[in-house]
Amino acid sequence: MKEALEAKLGPVASARLLPGGASKEAWAVDLADGTELLVRRASVGVIHRDTLTLEQEFRVLEAAVAAGVAAPRPIEYLGEVAGHEAFAMERVRGETIGRRIVRDPPPGLPGQLAEQLARIHAIVPLDFLPRGDVIARFYDELDSVGEPHPAIEYGLAWVRERLPEPGEQVLCHGDFRVGNFAVDERGLVAVLDWEFAHVGDPLDDVAWPIVRAWRFGADARRLGGVGEVEPYLERYNELTGRELTLEQLDVWEVLGNVKWAIGCLTQCRRHLNGQDRSVEYAVLGRMAAEMEYELLDLIEHA
Image (cartoon, rainbow, N blue to C red; front, side):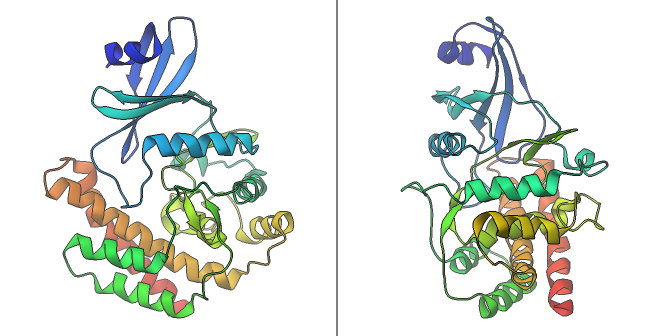
């Protein structure tokens, strides 16, 4: 791998594969001149059908940084590196492991998340970004799994009855949650992993971090295990002029559990069909049952 990177970046002092990442590899690369990079490289398969190519993700990252979003500075789109698409960006400091972040979250983090979302949603959407009926898309993805999941279908039907007609559409990050943030003792350092960027309802992003899976065991703090939802939502509305409500978040929280359940099942397919054999992917398939239970519980208490 070091030789492949040197062909694109010049002399490389070291290159090491970092742990984590369900569908992309992350390589910490130190160049001989002392420059520290992170190379994001495609793996085998994707989680969702509308996942961006790495060239498209690079362009979204460029737009985000230009808009003042706290995100890693994109350096260079590399094309194929050892047979898989890749790009280089600056290597930011900070903790990214969710379970560590929720142990002692910085007190200002919820407000910082709201501020970054406001900036992201003000970016003019790029013309190649996916858009369309979110419910139809998840029905299609669920059908691709090839096995019955009535709880997920019920969740989709329940949400479809409660979503209004499509309204304002913005550039959404698509995976805005703890685990995709770099955080230090002062708060948010950078928003990471833009592969699911798309054009959609702002509630898609605003509600995603409240899904229980992204609280990493700190369930008492509904906002990603790091804080309360009300001040986060209030700050977002203040910055954007929108009037999103807690009741709307409740509906999108159910949809978020549907989304992650389907994501777990599609990743498990990569293991079961031999595309990318992995114990991690096999375990994710079993985790879908947790989201099924959660969405049924949320619906019961709605």
